[in-house]
Length: 227
Image (cartoon, rainbow, N blue to C red; front, side):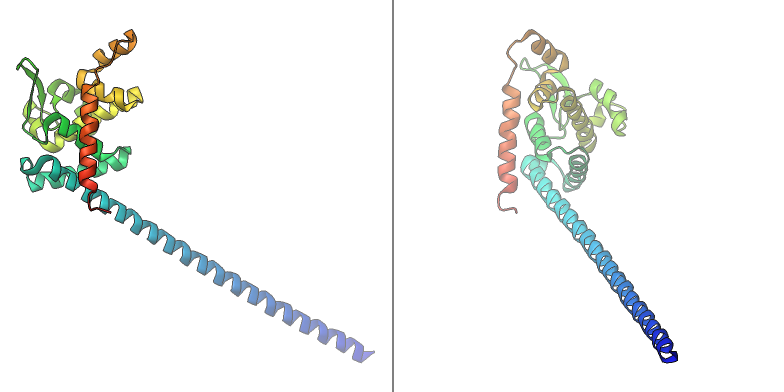
């Protein structure tokens, strides 16, 4: 009887020790798996960060090359670097193709930061700089994008003109939800486009077609021999 009781006690002790051993092993294994999962998550985050950096570097190179093709010597290296950084930030923040902005610049001024717009008659239009922004329009938009415009001469500063001109184009895209209409309005004005849309008259397509041709040209040249 005593032997049976001792046997039961011993069996119970051994079972307890075994359960504790298995539980400890299980805990250690879970801890190891958790550590591995954390390491994998960290590695994935690092890989994602490297991918993002790589994407940004490639986008920077493409924009920089686009400005070289577009403006040549009309912009200094310092101006091109500033514009590249601004365009990269704008394209990232607002999900807009930077080549489209470059195409508008090509259509408007051929990359000349000192361009002054004229009508077909030869009279001055009041449009200034890279994106041919009018002073009155610039005053309305500048504050919303943190740009200080004190005089028309400020629109000959490339990065200020780019910021104001792009902000205006983005407003038009948001208003019309249609790139074609936005580009037409950028050229002829909101009032003229709205009137034509309301009346059902044929829209003036010349400017839109020109921007699209410039876009195609720049895209082909920028991506040539690039990954």
